[in-house]
Length: 316
Image (cartoon, rainbow, N blue to C red; front, side, top):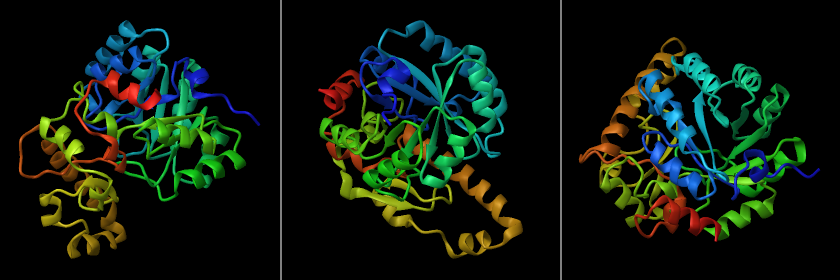
């Protein structure tokens, strides 16, 4: 069965979503992305207050051009205490699409569809893909083992083909795209489009420090490692001297506490909070604690460029 292309789903020129990245994504990036004919997505959690979130949506609506589209990423599990209010704002303001992560998207799909908003769901395997299909999702974002941040465990080709053969939903591939060749490869596997994050970290418009951007230029795929020290869940980071010093495995105490059923939930929440605060400082301030999240697709990042030029490299 031929599945609806991402360009048709979102009314965009090129089959690319600028992926939502914690701390990195902002309205400047998305506006430039829309001008270049792609979709942009921002984590709702990048905004501390609901008013800031609402203002960002209104700015994007005012700047929207033909051939571009914008959406927001929602963390839909209990760790996001702002979830319900964020969902309400997104529906009231009628964003183009919502991308869900880390939890059941059932309520999001119901409320978003009432407002005429499409919902794409992050999935890492077939079991969860079939679950969100049954809930009415509009497309699957197939997070593979080449993605940055919290990645999946399955290679792109296997995951895309598995989801295509066993679900009726369009598959958007996430991870491993840093060039036009990579994009074409994902489309050849059967994806209707791609979600691209790491190459946009080193954009002029991104909100992170110059050191973080330059690291994405100076380091490559071989320098990406998995660490459990940020959120308690394996996450890909650049293997800086600081990461090498602190190590990538949980301490014996963290491992012990995580085995205690009554304490595990609280330990993970505290670990996540501490890790996110450390990541925020590293991303936005000059600090020796350089914990920079990125994926192997920074291999193709050779300079800090405007978003428009990064898009051009991906599609032309």
